[in-house]
Image 1 (cartoon, rainbow, N blue to C red):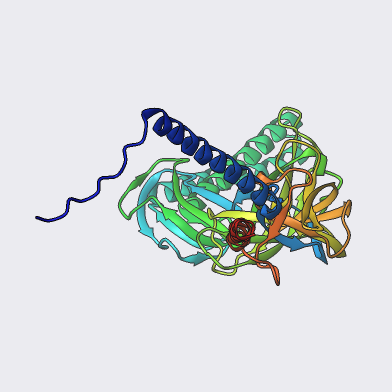
Image 2 (image 1 turned 180 degrees about the vertical axis):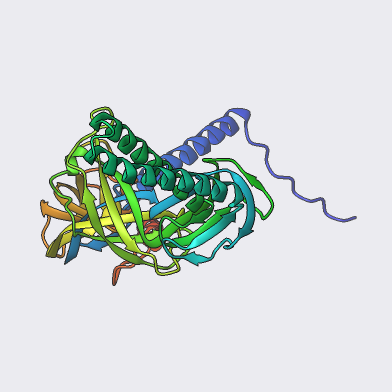
Amino acid sequence: MLPSARLPRRLPLRTLVFTLIALTGAFALSACKAGKGGEGAGKPGEADKGPDAVPVEVAKAERRAIAASYANTATLEPRAESQVVAKTSGVALAVLVEEGQQVKAGQPLVRLDPDRARLAVAQAEAQMLKLENSYARAQKLVAQQMISANDLDEIKYNLANARAQYNSAKLELSYTTVTAPISGVIASRDIKPGNFVQINSPIIRIVDSSRLEATLNVPEREIAKLEPGQKVTLTADALPGRLFTGTVDRVSPVIDTGKGTFRVVAAFAGDGELQAGMFSRLSINYDQRADALVVPRNALLEDGGDPAVYVVRDDKAQRASLKLGYDDAGWIEVREGLKEGDAVVVAGKAALREGSAVQVLGAAGAKPAAAKATAKAGDGKSAVPAQAAQ
């Protein structure tokens, strides 16, 4: 018979309860101490983060030439234009020009049927010759006192009237050949051989494109700045990439009180590329500064206040109020408020306030914002285990 195994002695119920209560308290005390130790370890290792730096792009204030100019748009017009009309009626026997053809002043364009006009000239000439003979005889008779001086004056008056009618008939005959009133190019032709032409009806349009003009309606505040002879640059939408130059030809001294503008006419040589009717963009330079302090125009703040920019100093944004000068091709002159070499913010302005920390993108030695944040986070994490190990 195997010996019986010894069973453990049963503890009293009161002793078991007290033991459980003691163990529970010990665990609670240990957890509380661990929590206090964790807080103490976390504080020395935490970095003083503060606000994140705002990434910005900057440009330096620099010195360069800048021009003061007035810019506007206009349509090119020919120096002279003529709508040729028929000064008499008749059938067109011949049309002597085509569209696009160059013509000279006085060159025949259209020939109308001259028969009716020739008959009128012959009749007027016959009447004039008759009265000339009558007047010659009357002069002899008045010397012989066979007719009165009044009769002689009457014949003289009739002769003058006949001569006028003869000249009028010859002028009407000349109208049967329609000639060019100006030199230029035939822009349009509204007549064909065989058409019956009414008097004063337009039949041909001629434009003189040897010189083109652009008329600008300029605000009256510019009247003291613009004058004849100033250089004008022109670009046309129809000729991208091309730049043309001209001069201010005329400046009107009279201001339109209704619009508050005055007229400025710029002239350009018609060299075959520029054509009448082209939409153009013009710029008139009326002053030049060879050594102006300038910044990009997109550096200006658009907050509705006085002109200002953000300048980066000691990695912080500082608002600088400016006194501005000329504005030219994306650059703006700064007369007060900056010095040469100042770094002004050109991108990222909307997120800045006075004193904001900034990170200049593209600057030498600058770490990306994400790398700085990762480094800070890593330092914070390593501090906690160090304290816990202690």
